[in-house]
Length: 191
Image (cartoon, rainbow, N blue to C red; front, top):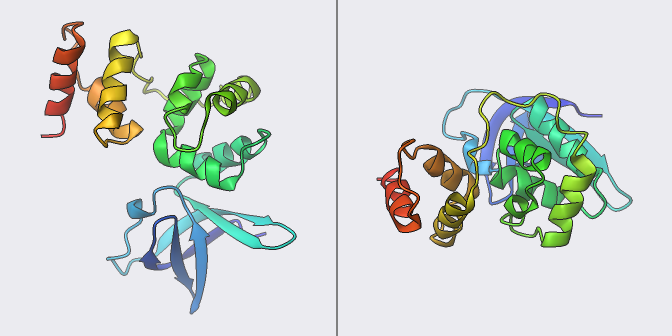
């Protein structure tokens, strides 16, 4: 199996990148291809997972081993394939995914494109005991009703779930409970 690749990123695309290793270009599907730097000619290192199917061999790449392990764990959920697992990792940080699973907040997962209510509930149910190890130090912002409405508003304005969560986390502790005011304060994060 191909466990890692180190080489120059030749190009990035919407869902994959091409990494050249000793003159051979590998097509690697990654979460958030834009996070990989093709401008610098420095070598990039990817932790990879090769999935062999009857009709294809597909390579998936990740920044960290933890990201690859969470991807593999997501694949064990019935109904979650590699594309959906990549979409989840592109939309939600690993710590926030773990917190959503532990706190049984399936509605957070429904904000990921392609994840419906039933799939989100299945992910939460099946991963409840599998994602608790390695919980990060930065807990997910508590999504009370006001914060949930703020997140929905920011996502509907075109911000990603990660950006919306970061903006909500930047709200001052003494921010008012008024949803409109919280949205206004959250939008200031992007200025």
